[in-house]
Image 1: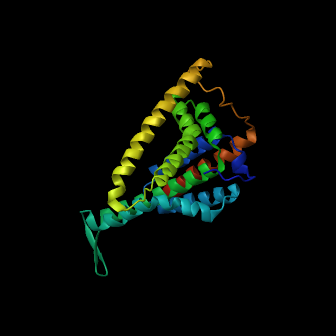
Image 2 (image 1 turned 90 degrees about the vertical axis):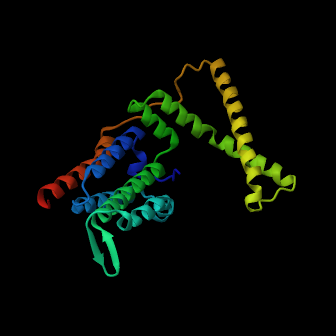
Length: 247
């Protein structure tokens, strides 16, 4: 999901972006939806980060379609929740459900776009090095590193199995083809497990001791912290302004 650009956001080390990301998300999640002025500020901060990162907005918007299931669920909440009811034209809606649905859509949208900017401006290696720098449990980092490293290997295995099926005359024909797909998934799992065992033995024979030395620490300059922390600082400022002047 990484998109190469030359920008201030791309230059930031992974751990600084992770700290800024989690701080921003925590502030946004803890803000009550009734404090809508603060959320206006949060979205302006997202637009600022998007402008500084030079990422293509249309590409991020397409990736953000992953949020659609949450939007559908949020739209249904005013019709299914109980409590005080009110009418908008012919519709009879729940006030509590409407507030909860708006809260879900707003905060989910903020989280999705933050994730898209983080993923689009940070390489996988930088993210993993960042998790190491912020003292994430080593087992989590190792699992993520192996998953990223061997994802292409699994994709290549799936492609070869697809070619093998088609060379034997297989054609997907609705529900009748499901048993073939399930057996393919089972075979893929077994082959992946066996490959993982071979890779682990190979790593142990080369001196693997439970840590990944390839995740080198990135160089950090003072300006990196100033640029990275400006986003959660602006979020905290927006929260305080909304709480003090508009509550």
